[in-house]
Every structure is written in structure tokens, then in C-alpha cells.
Length: 230
Ligand code: MG
Ligand code: MG
Image 1 (cartoon, rainbow, N blue to C red):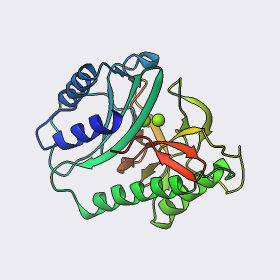
Image 2: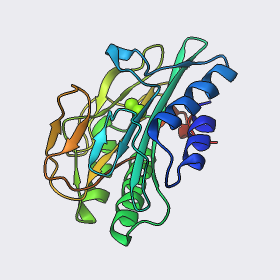
Image 3: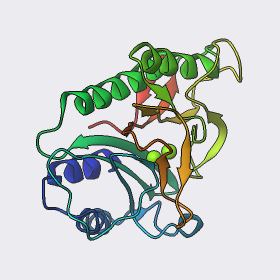
Image 4: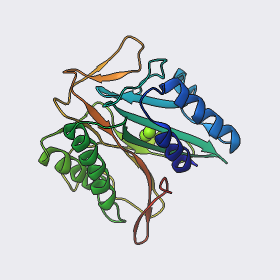
């Protein structure tokens, strides 16, 4: 459901649409499936999606401001269904975007998949963190430290935290059946974060662009299974 709905939302992104409209689409899509929008009301968060354009890293509010050609938009979305949560995020271009922004999105997605590829029974948690960090930093970007991935299951955020940085070989050993939300937030400039007065919207301190990709991933006997892909 998370994959289907995020795909629908991504397809709707074009110059002129507002993030309020995308939020309505997400709510309708949940209703149709009798699923609960996991973020709406979570610690008081007012929307079904976190919509985070350009320099907004995560937790952006939906607004009436139309997206414009050249923006990039991160959409983070989760549902609760039958007692379990799913959580995923993508960053998509609004129309044609600059080469720099396109590269930031591509590298962030690659860093997510590097992290996912480190998932296997017997691996250490920080093997994921290190894989993400290496891809992002080798490309000249920085990873956000203030927000991290997480375990997920009957609660949206469970232990362990999954940082996007660190040396390999540390932290809990992964076991079959564990489920993690891996979610690199990669900045074009410095990794520093500022939270706006609304108490949620996290932006880059230097105003540079940021991208975010996330999948919910299960540890399986043979490695991993991505639970939020189509
Ligand atoms: Mg998320
Ligand atoms: Mg998450």
C-alpha cells in the first residue's frame, strides 16, 4: 500500500500542484484501502505526508504554495494496516531540474540501496550506516546526523535507531525477521539542520538542497526483502 500510494503521489507531482493537494490524494488513497495514514496525528503532526521541497530535509508541512519547475520534492509516507506499519520516502523532480539536483537525488537513492545491500543476518547494524555514508560522501555530499532510520513493526518507530553514518562492525547483529526503515537524508552542502518555528520543518542550515529516500526492509534468511517496493 505504501509503495502504491507513493507511486501515485510521485506521478501527480508537476509544476503547479500544491503539497496540500498531494496530501489530499494520500488521504483518499488510504481511505480507498481502509488503511490509516500513519503520520497524521503522530505526535501532533498534521498531515498524511511529509512534503519537503528543496532545502527542506524532512517533516515539511503541506502548503497551498504551488510547486514550480526545477524544484525537487521529498515525499515521506506511511500507513498502518492490520496492526503493522510501513514507511517509505522518495524525492522526485518537479518538471525539469538542474543536473546538480538530479545528481543529488540519484546519489541519495544509491546510498539507500547501498545500505539495503548491507542487510543480511549476521551483519552489524552499522554496516548499513557505513554503506550509506560512503556512497554519499564519496560523491561530495554530507549525511544528516540529526535524524535517523529506525526499526518498524507494530509501532512506527521502534529500536534500533539506524544512523546514516558510522564505522562498520558496530551495533546490534541483524537477525532474520527484523524489519528496519532505512532512510538516508543527504545534503548538497553542510549536514547541519535547523528546525523552523512550527516545531517540525527541518531545513538545511546553509539553505542548500537535501534529498531523502526510504524503504522498509526485512532481514531474511538469505539477505533482505524490500517491503515497500512495487
Ligand atoms: Mg518515512
Ligand atoms: Mg521512517
